[in-house]
Image (cartoon, rainbow, N blue to C red; front, side):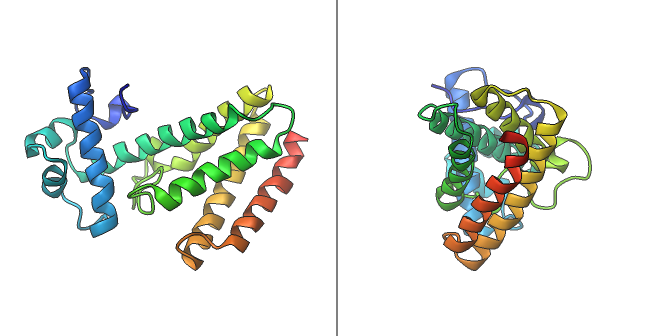
Length: 207
């Protein structure tokens, strides 16, 4: 099965064959590993090619520069996040919304704790551009979460729900950053407060 492929607008060339998709996956895996080891500023396409075991030309076949590569990694992370939530929701009834919201937070925490490169490139890139979809990745996250919540809970994805999810995403993002600044594994007390905040705020639209 092919790994999620980033949107075509973040790639110079979209892989069609499995071999090409596998090569792209190796490049993004290498990018994520090197982000943890060297940081974004010291990341280079040459180092990524060496770590991935591919010619430098293979990297440039997909990406014009390291920013494009990081954007593609962020898109893949978002796809994996949504897929992970969907797996968690498969075991949850649609009658209670709080466990569903917990699943959204728990999947994010799991990725934050274990996914290579996620501390620097989660769903957006450092110093994002001022225009385009990459300028505000939380809008993309909120849109995907609104679709998931609506489908699972049988809700209408209207403007009120979309706005509430966006505000919850922005607030949760800030609080989880605080939790991981306080503790590399995420300060448990701050995580608990974040969960309580999400429940209290979203009760306005989900109760």
